[in-house]
Length: 179
Image 1: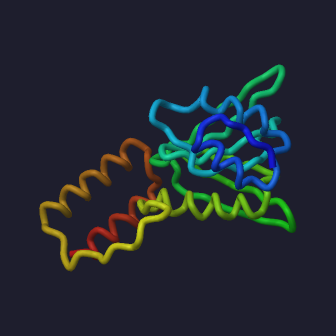
Image 2: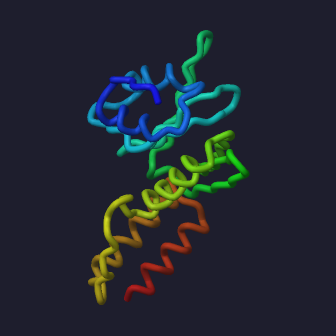
């Protein structure tokens, strides 16, 4: 496997890739699209739109980055905007589908091992759990003020379009069941 010497977090994630074909340039230039303080947790390769590029799961968002000779594409999916993730795997490759803010992004030709792991970690992240955090026991009962606050926040998320109606009713039911 190629050594990149870009940044420790990017190098560690790149070492886990089964192949870097079609993503070497993106790995080298990834620091250009990262925000200050953003660290890379996992990388995968894939095809999105017309470009074969790099998927980067960071501590703040999921990024698809394609840097070609004639064009460049950066699309990011902040975790708080992702409503669900689907993984469909074949013999060697699969498709990662990300639903975010009412849009659907299909990243194809993702190596099966990387895609499944990435999808699992994304699901954990958007469900509110950190990928390596142990499960915490649920509190016996939440105070009434906390419930009202959580319901108000949920109403605001729905009004802003950050969550779907289905997610709203699912989360609302869970909040009320905690009484």
